[in-house]
Amino acid sequence: MLNITIFILTLLILISQNLLLLNEESLILLCFIIFTWLVYNKLKTSIQFDLNSRALNIHKSIQSSFDYILVSLKSELNIQQKVRDLTDNFCDLKSYFMKLNTFLILELKEFTLGNYQKSYKKKLVFTQRLEKQTSKLLALLIVKKLRKITNLNQYYLKNFQLGTWKCIYKITLREYFETIQKRV
Image (cartoon, rainbow, N blue to C red; front, side):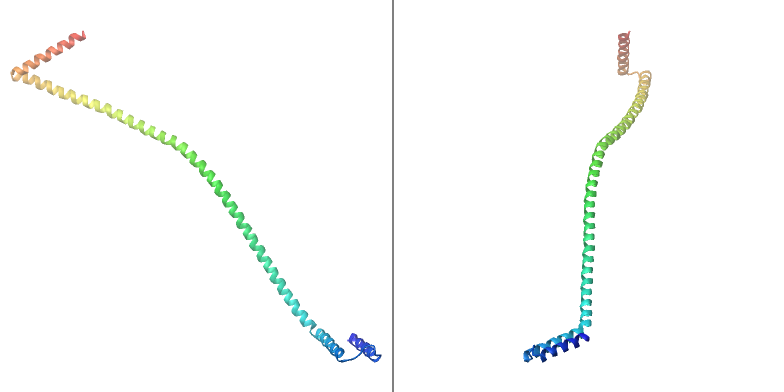
């Protein structure tokens, strides 16, 4: 308030001494300056408060934008790192899978060969046993049939006096004698 009074007194002194001319334009200029100065003094706090609140809002908006950008960049970086880790894991998985496949192929060949050999040996042993049993059974059947034949042959020779039976009997006796002579 003191500044205004000093300014007005100085202005009046200058006008009274005719150092400052008062015409229309200067009065309009003076009124405009006073009006502007009064508006500034009266509205200074509200304008400053409004500008500060706007600046604070802009600052908060920029800060939240930066925070959001920072969070999104961090998440993007994490995603890229996870993708890199995932590709590395897939490459590792591929190498493990290749090693496993080569191992399985090599071992599977030996495993199947061993299994085939075991099963073939079992089948071979089974067929050998079966062959022995079959040969024994066949030998027993042949011996039994031959006994029946010889018994029937002797029965027919004794009971039926047929010439053909006597002839066959004599031929077989001759063959037996020949085989006995060859062995001796």
